Image (spheres, one colour):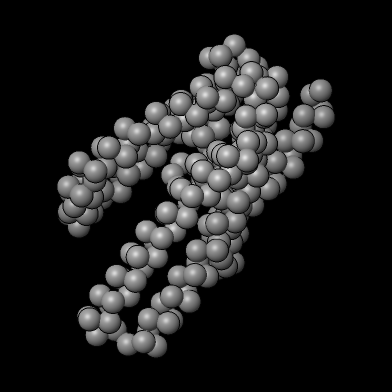
Length: 233
């Protein structure tokens, strides 16, 4: 069955090795950055303050990632979800790609899917995001330099970025609307919660609320989805 393969100890080992490699690369980059800042005349006191503030601000986004990991693990198992969200990917893409792969194999639930379905899900989730990585290797630097120039000239950079985000929503969001009232109500509820938190952050001046916006939406949205599921069961 699906989870007999998805929870194999070997997958934990392989994912752990891959993540350890990423951690080593991050540590090497951090060491080089630290050395470069010292060469530029930044004092050790300033560096310590920078490291401390960066560590604090890194904790906030990680909360939503951990919540996303828990929800994705329920679908495709812990090792593969751990690997995907630790290296590259986000919950929305990974969930959609995994669901599409599962449905293409002729199943409507991961609980009763076959072992071969897990291989198909891994293939779809990995292949679907490779183009972006390859594209960034070739065009990432010139694209960002061009974007930075447009930002200095006026509002075009902001418009371009906003249009890109709207295009992503146009691709991913409709897929949830057609899955039933539970999905629709959960989405609308999370959207309203996000707007409320944004309003409160601006009204009260508590900027930290905005940092926890995604985490609040995920937690409250999941709780409400259970309620909606009971109402429409």
